[in-house]
Image 1 (cartoon, one colour):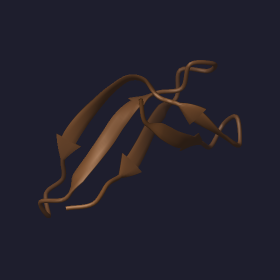
Image 2 (spheres, one colour):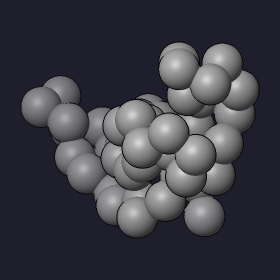
Image 3 (tube, rainbow, N blue to C red):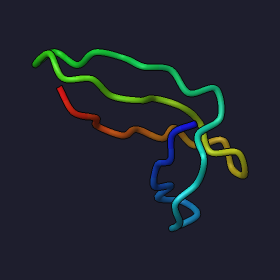
Image 4 (tube, rainbow, N blue to C red):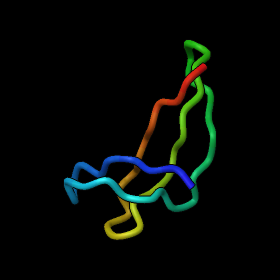
Length: 47
């Protein structure tokens, strides 16, 4: 699982329903939801 920063909870959380996406510039990223509040989490990965 991937970890991301939740701006509502102000803490790092494990992403729920994490999916790998590709950004417009070609870089990979992980997109998911905060398990506590449901806010979208986003983490940019390497190429």
